[in-house]
Image (cartoon, rainbow, N blue to C red; front, top):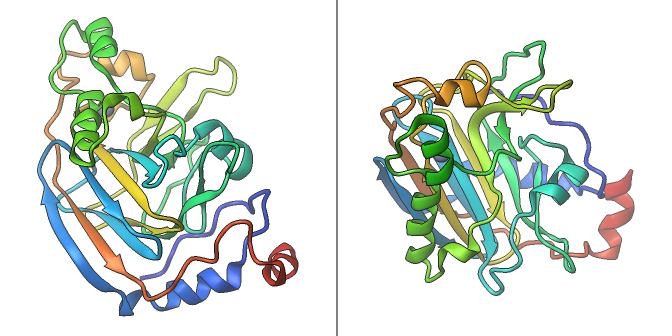
Length: 265
Ligand SMILES: [Zn+2]
């Protein structure tokens, strides 16, 4: 399968050769666990040097993803830093950055099979700044709420021994999102993802990974307008969650001196 183009080069040095070698060995990764989720939240641990893969089993499904350090859950993906360092979208070779003071890569995307169709307003799958739907928003926009992402993430956090206080602004995987350049409104287009599409991350440190399968209908216009429709809550498509042993230890952060010069080239 041919991979989509790599996103713009990030601000920090990136040791591309190391990750290209890792990607070249993906077929040799061994499966540690593999489960299919039907419609809820989930939490699991991924040790440093392992990988986790999220695969669409039957069709598009927005996945809200929280990533936290297992040693210190206050060190988690920070979307503001993420946008400043990598931009607002995630694709192959995008690193996921944690909170200050360490501001280190927690994970690196090593595979993303979604083929994005460019659109004039610039939305793209795997949006990093959409946060998660919650009971208050659903009630405000639709006058009802089922089981929003907030509750799913709360459930997933409980599975790894944490509470909802550790929910953070998260990635929206398989969501084609962006911002209106004039109004700043959050906009979402129909995802380009298809059955069998996957995204895969390599753990740069021991991680707790928590996800929600979002129950919101895939909107085609302004998010608030879409949620105001009577059929805003939709059927959730199952996903497969796979953890893998890669046989490759993380480089650590900061990067070893010898790699910095070549990474910056
Ligand atoms: Zn949601």
